[in-house]
Image 1 (cartoon, helix red, strand yellow):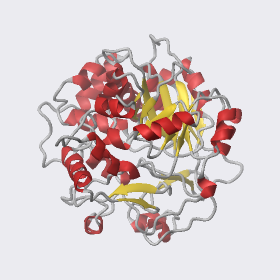
Image 2 (cartoon, rainbow, N blue to C red):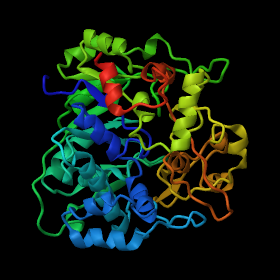
Image 3 (cartoon, rainbow, N blue to C red):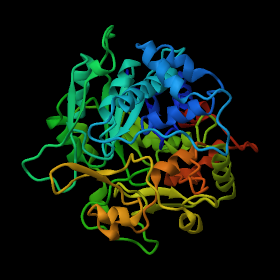
Image 4 (tube, helix red, strand yellow):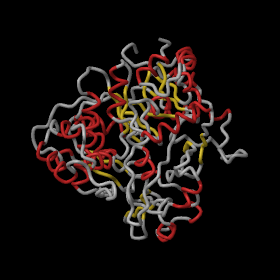
Length: 473
């Protein structure tokens, strides 16, 4: 286990942990992780903003199929950037059978992000995906592997089939993944399929198999994955409910406290003894962003810790400057407020939300937003009466959701994470109504501890500062 990192930087939201952050962490000797969520959309929007540093086009120039990469530049690149009063060009939504254009954009976008994170150094780089967002995962994995990604992290579900899929993709084999569609009859098996030969017809490069680290919240899930996954599991990230982003729901019946937040109890404590017995390395996550918590994790037998919140607000993170500065100012003033919202996310998982003035966490901002579903990453596939698949999202217009067979109760309080997360990183869509999308920021409960990184009047810090702080240097 000496070859494993002590610190894993969390895969933050969509695009917050971009190649810049992952590279900084990797160059400091730890595991830098890029977020794999919505990368096709992010690449398309960054190209439309003119790719001012030229790094995206440089990475695209290294893609194994130059013609494919040139086609993406031709379609989305805007020299000098699009006017701020014009909307972004749209990207197709995912379905069980996405078109070739979207598959190619997905492969290329994952390649670009990992390539840039690994460029110019010998450190290790990982990528983070969500099992809940199944339909992009096959083509996303292939793109990351083409760029030589070292680790794949995956949470928000039970990713039993992903290790075997990675094995097949190492040999450029065709792969499929059964979709967790709602209301499926027993005799039907709806699948997402991906064939690498549709992306690269010749000159297939040799690929290595990344290490696979599922993100889990119980010893039972760790044991299940270690024994029944379709391929090798290389370790675990054990995440508690104080972590930012999506949290596992409480075990048993959900009980809410006076603030409307879910109550976690002894049943939600992870039996680390049973995880140690598996003989695989594990990292602890969820409010482990201090030297003291790192030492306690090591004492418990962990290889180290995964840290998200501290990296989310460092200089290299891709959070929009306005968002980052408001959060840091609240940290300094001691006025940060983080709430575990049980209904905000269309996934149905509890979701940590930071209170900010101009964001969807503000009830007035939420009320002002017209409901629209134009990105679709969190749409749920469901089986229609004729046996085919349809797609619905509890955050879409209420009438549309109910017309598709959804329960109206599921729409109450739902927020559009897709558009909110794009606004977080400075890529808000301008809707046809003239409404400009607002952020929806997620952060961990330990955000208040960041004052220790801003001593002597400093109002910002770097990824390297976080690592030195954690290691007691």
